[in-house]
Image (cartoon, rainbow, N blue to C red):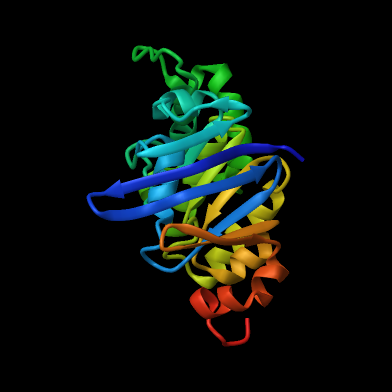
Amino acid sequence: MGATLRTEALTKRYGGLLVTDSVSLDVREGEIHALIGPNGAGKTTLINQLSGELAPASGKIWFSGSDVTSLPIYQRARRGLLRSYQITSVFDEFTVLENAVFAAMAAKGHAFKFWRPMVANPRARAPAEASLASCGLEHRLHTLAADLAYGERRQLELAMSLAAEPRFLLLDEPMAGMSVQESSAVIALLQRLKGRYTILLVEHDMDAVFALADRISVLVYGKVMFTGKPEEIRNHPQVRAVYLGEEEI
């Protein structure tokens, strides 16, 4: 399978601090590729560069065969490269459906007509309803986002990303702050989405990583130490020593 997203020697410095150090990474079409590493490894900085929020000092980012290194966030989003944030960014005063429709319209650059209910836009409503059904929120369409439980808010955030009809998802800690039950629900959801989307997953929950990932890259001090399948990561002595530790996993 070809690489949907690829980086070449991606580097970012803050003064004398090298945060991402010549990162070369490829994420293949249809796979869930997990990015793991200790705190301070440079994961968030790398994701910020991929999404367009942060310009690299040097290096290249290729998406679907095109160089997108200099493209702003909205242009990457319109090409199908979308990020779901670690902290939920929904509109509490909108319903679940309105949030998803808004996301669909914004990602595609649709004009907003404030004298007309946005849920009346069929080109945005159809993908919004489909994404909410995929995320198990079809029974909550008319619920205000403010009234959702924490786990449901995270599901809504993911549904908003799907409503934008992405080709590639950057998922930043989708299970952060969740209970075991909520995490299990999100793992099951991502397993259902597997193969339909190409996903780069940043996640500290190693049970989730091993349950979901086709391949895993380990980032340490801004460099990719190793990329391999889950079993290769489990058994790699340097990875165990630096990140996973020597306890049984």
